[in-house]
Length: 284
Image (cartoon, rainbow, N blue to C red; front, side, top):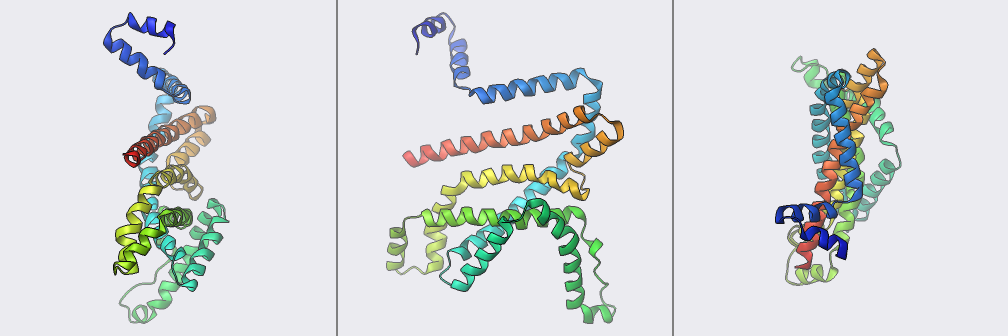
């Protein structure tokens, strides 16, 4: 520690010295974001307009979190399945999974969203009607209409299908990072490939890619704003409606950005803490 700083801290009490050391460890980017957040909060408290805007857009916070959480959980399951197919010994399974992953990763998320909403949902309804035709003709069930699937459901399906392709590659990389010697040793002991994958490979693979999976959740929270293109009442859509009716675009989108920054920065800090904890665990 520099001499001037050491002598300055020596004149402080224990609590003040601990606070000063903690302040020195705070990254500059985080301090800048905290200052920006403090300024935004102070502006919101001082301005009646911001208070109204925050109240109006905060009603979409639950929709944003619900869409993000459901889509992320579903994409984890689908991505794990695709990742296992990518490392399968069956060539048709590997090729089919690779075809899906490369196709979906090559499309913008907004295009996937529109495709599922306006092409996939009607096609699914037509397929269900064809499958249930005997029951429909007998009057036991009614016809399935495209509008039976609300836009929030379509948005969740689109985000799930899109992010599953990226998560599948994360799982594939994690599985391939496990030392092949462990797999060969487990197979030599008589474990089947399924047992090796469940007991040896997947626990280590998930541990290796946990920070990357957490980063995907941060990304899906941001991309959940795309569902506003379908009219889903999330933060972005409510902000868009309020700004269009009041022409207070600057204040409204400041509030929308504030909500997303609070969510994503908090999640990013949790991811960094998780990475540090995993690194400490690996060293020990």
